Length: 390
Image (cartoon, rainbow, N blue to C red; front, top):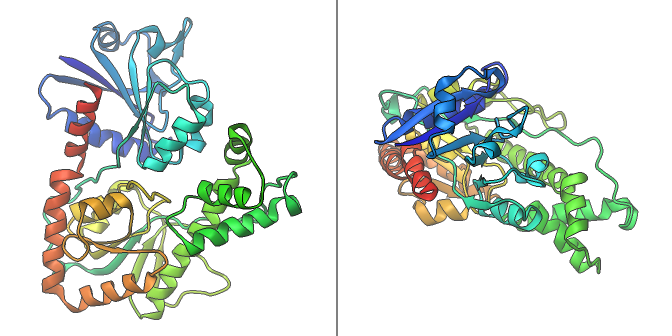
């Protein structure tokens, strides 16, 4: 029997972490010889006998999202180090956001990244981490019955926020114009080639302009000054608005659930119907009533967020910007519709074709549903993770 502790938090603190943690718990309970316990680390008590038995069993691991419970301590120090527990920390976001726990990590920390680029970033800038694992996110099936394509009430759904505009950026004193030229050039590089990461683009500028920067300087730029995050935010906002404006111009109706979508310079028409942000569970239920689930992923170029998988699992046709993982594991036009960010017109054409050809769209939706249920749902991903943990 192997014991697995899932660390989450009080519901009011972060419902996204708890939602995905609940899916892990459901999947793990289906696996023989696994005993799983959810631990709300912000309400832990020393009288939890079940927890103490698991910690002392000699066969126990902790699994968490985004450092949740990672630094849990008692009077004698970190509880996971004290009992020699292997911790598997699943980072939903870029690892630069978790510097406080990665720079001087606890013992037996295994970091799981959704994107190979993120895994490489951890290996490069956080060499003290015991193990770095690349594993894409997984989808959640929220609806009990898959509604036929033609019965779905929404043509296109997008659940997610749009990045905010940056009023100011961090100065970089050793660069020309305090780094303004670097921001401009790096952003331009990405618009020329959207497969680049923001870190790639910044380093490209530095190398082409004769700035021989070592790991320490790059760490300062990427982590302390958040230069690459700023570049990424600017690019992501621009691309998201470009996609939405292209759909608007094509007279395609899109229901958007999220914040940050106001474009004062170029307001959307009534085609783009913006709603308040909803919970993760409600978002997945909405997908179950959408013909097309639009995915504009976080800047994952060699991996995947849960977004494409969630669309397919709940019966919609997923139209997503591409990544190497999606290209290698799915087939454009068969079980998914993929587009490059520098060819947004393909996404528009694909969506128009899907809406005009519901029978063919239904086949693609069902192909995607069966494929993702087999390979990229929570049950499948937990199986992969348990194999890695063994």
